[in-house]
Length: 171
Image (cartoon, rainbow, N blue to C red; front, side, top):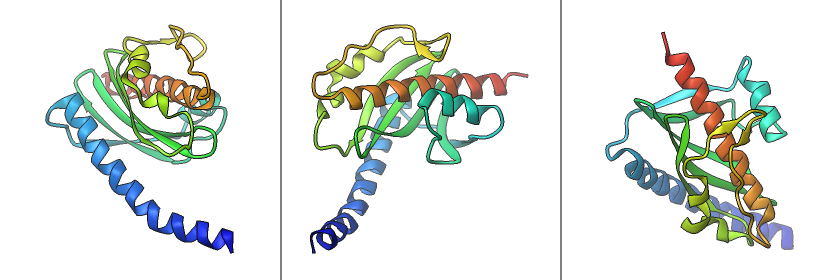
């Protein structure tokens, strides 16, 4: 009976998560671009797929990603599992460096401190170093280790994807 209640609860909550995510995405894109450009699509295929798998240590759950680009600035809305649930994060990259990280939807019961601007500000200016690592240390949060790791992976992923789409755009 408990499983049935949980499934019913998730059925009613899931649409609310989707509505929250869409509203937060629109807000995030407005912060990054003012007037957001039209979304573009990136297929995770070819040489990009194994690079993403190596960085995340698993396949990304979608075959294609929606992103926004204006000049040298891109914005990504990405998901990664913290401990048990996906964390949806907006990441803006400008000229190959993280410009802004914002947790759009946090679904875990613990570790919500990663939503704090004091934590996400640590990513500002970070670049991708050799080995798909960040060029700086990101301080952890006690009790939120898995969420911190998830945001770190997503920042690295956004930098990798940004590099890929901007290199593809060059003549």
